[in-house]
Length: 212
Image (cartoon, rainbow, N blue to C red):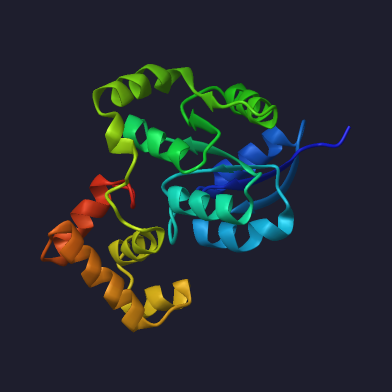
């Protein structure tokens, strides 16, 4: 029987190695990546069935990377393996195409179970999150429909700037001009009604665009 092809993405290298050895007993691990940008660049050539990724990664966070992956590989299954217990973030992950959400505090066997579930076409949410997510949806379901009205490109620019990169560095990473980065930055500031870089950073932290 053909083994499912898995990609792992997390900026903690020791965790990547541990996960790889754990999953190799049942699946084929075809790639490991430490940031969202390199993941998105390489994934199409690796033809994965499932991508297991963290949310808080440098250069491009997991939510932005996941959204790009679903556009490039519509049939790929995304499972977020994260410390982030925020039900709003979990709900946003599913809105952007996730099939699974597992906390790093869960037992290792739970990730294997989640992969099996999503390969069968089902969704999986760790029991540690389910009740919180349902409460979050019940309290404010409309909040999940539009993530602060920022485009994917705006969120990518915001993450890089919030990480302390210059406009020139951000432009090089994204393959655009510094003028384009500046345009997105000042468009966001106007859109979000903020006037300083510090306020923009605070927004990025509150929105989990960069980890606290």
